[in-house]
Length: 630
Image 1 (cartoon, rainbow, N blue to C red):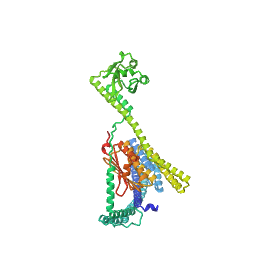
Image 2 (cartoon, rainbow, N blue to C red):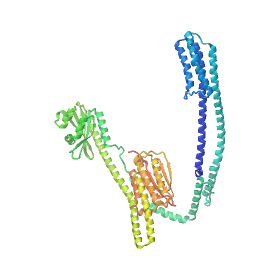
Image 3 (cartoon, rainbow, N blue to C red):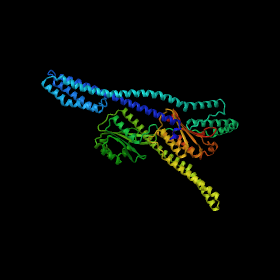
Image 4 (tube, helix red, strand yellow):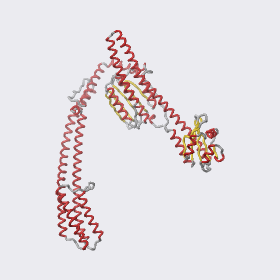
């Protein structure tokens, strides 16, 4: 617990939480006092209204007022007493629940039910006024009841005033307290740090800042500043040699790290085959007022035809069309022509015509469905009466059939693309297994051979070295297997892009014990599910390379979501050796996997040194043109 309060942010958060809790409680109690005052005032008003109703009721006992007026006023008195007894928190109205006030209320209700109400009813029957002395006595009882409520309200009113005074005093005191704490915790450390920065920027490379005797954020920042100043002083003292070394590295990097990835296009409207065909027949039936429609597709040899969609056809007819190949000859007959075919069913002797005629259809219009790949099938419009289709309508329907053929062919191509994507994904998984498990097993096989040789030669040193290497290799192989299994199970579902990135980072930190800092910015558009999946896989592969090769202590992931999506993964490890990467370009599966995934969504990936000191930067750019729906 004490370690928690050593953090400046934790202390500020705790003080803020305490202050906000006090304010909320104070405001809540103030609202409760106001509610009590309003509820009690409403009770007094209701009591005064009862007095007013009693005197009106005395007037309504005279014969020149109707029974309805008398009954209405009598009911009003009873209703007001009920409101005083039960209360209403939403008005608000509530009689204080003290013993004295409740006893007085019960006494008033009892006197009303036992004495006054029968008295008013008798006076109404006799058409005589009620004695004012009795009303005055009862009115005094009501006044006593009202005064008791007022005394109760006064106590809450004084509490409210005291609370307001207390809040004013605490607000003034907390202001000075906050100023003092900010001066001690924030302003003074910032001044010292700013002074050191000014000295360093002015050329004083020996400038250092005294590290505070705390363990908060300023302690860590000051320590980092001193380390940075040490590094800058070292670089300056060895500048000539460093410049020569870094210049050679930059020249080599420019020769070996130039890559360009092709952009690919995808179909903008991706609909399933059933959605295309069912939606088509529904629209055609609505446009032509046909009594039924069906789409029949045939194989390349026109030997077999299948009804894939229909609208308005009886269930028995559709069943026979689906199970029996009675449309085969009609499909071949229509496709053999270059124009739509109008069939008068009562003049045909085929089995299909007889079946349709028995279902009440008279005429059928058949249109060819073709695409650039060839004949696909036909679609048929059925009418129970002889239709009057104009030539323009027929031309339009013929043109629509061409679009239908293109749409059907596109759905088939999309399905082939999906199957191809599955094959590519399997290839990537196989590459991942080759890059990790296969190489690890090869290394273990070599170590087992060395172990066998050490045992045979009784070389204890070789045997122990081999056992240690096997133990390390098995552990690394186990870590690779765990990571691959997690990668294979990776799914985004309905999780947002940033939440998915956080999940990958949390898993990486748990595996590697390397801290990761995530920075996000930009109000850019949402990624598609495909883009989210590929980008997160690339981040995952980059972090995997950090765990295996970088020897890093810190990693920074930056996501800038503007018109272009830019993702950078930067580590402070040993850096990338461009010569080794170039020599193994065809064998480095991790980099090729990232490049191939980026090309799928029209993005590009680059890998370079993060700084002259070391570290590696993996940068992914998804341009705005690739993010637009096509």
